[in-house]
View: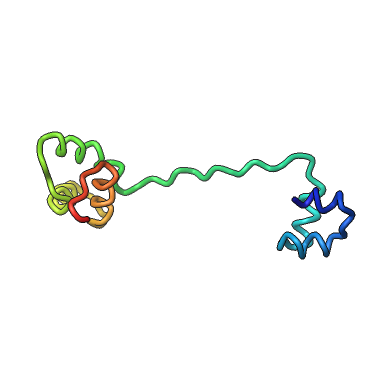
Length: 98
């Protein structure tokens, strides 16, 4: 869009006003030869990662509530909250609440 406005002959201030970007940002993008690729964030490790296999194994054995699984993994050293266990179960289609 900035390049299109530049082709129309608008000055930096006008381009800035039309796009909502700062004047320095407009200049920066006009000086680039290629569109920058968005940077991928490093995946953050979850507190639950070390216990997911255990939870999945327990789910194959029978129906378990999030509260029960939370208590079991807490005894194993889990330091997170019950909510993360509930969210994990919901992502696997095992929600116990609507």
